[in-house]
Length: 384
Image (cartoon, rainbow, N blue to C red; front, side):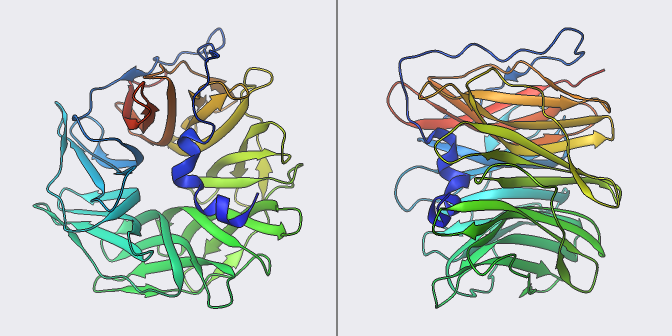
């Protein structure tokens, strides 16, 4: 995978293949899966765009969803769920995309992304409004894809930047309560290295994942995993994966010995399959995903859970150039199972998921008959 394509993946992955006339059947749960099917929840009527991140404090009354519009310099999308409906939140004066959001309290939330000027975009919610908070600019093409926080004075944002020599490096920013600071994150290879997702358990236990380019001549990528121990970021070997186009999109940590990361693996020019890895406190291992329909291309973009036996992963699935359909999988402590998720338009993809004890939210976008994308929000009442 080309480095430039990988950088754009968080946005373009929704509908990279466009729309074709062929149809793909709904993905359905295997017999015995005790999960509530997903349902589409109305979102505010917005100009064309998509949602890329979701988080909150209470799935039933306080959740955030963020994203961006698919046209010209424009403010990001920020939506709020109050228990009855999703609405557009008071907007900061900014242009760009927001890729990720994390709620800490009713008066403390962070969202991160990319401004229209290729600089990091960080916004903060203080209980009344969102405002832009200045962030360091380490190079050119500065992206922030993920944000997580164990507390108000301990917030992490990760992504990538391009140095003056044209090399793409991991970017890790830390908020200590007063300002953002760059914390060095190591390169996995001398080529492109990108961090897409981050999950923070405590001040000395933070995980970040993405991809590292291993052979620029053949565009080969492998998973990149890094860990913060309170003093430094270090590289942690991922489980070996076959193929040469392997990436991790996001990570969710339940405890120090129970961490999940998801993405996709495959061979350039061939099919793409879901990639799921688990950390048991000692090493990462590949955990088989629920088998998708044969001959389909599949990618997982979001993961979140409530316990070691209740974890969700979401993304998209397509057969050749056929329209994308939402892909949702659930971990019950023993295995991953497919769960039915409705298609909202000609194409539908889910980019992020956030699970709480009462219900689970997933967000993304759908491709409509007018050839534009629009926000997609789906809800599940959980599994038993």
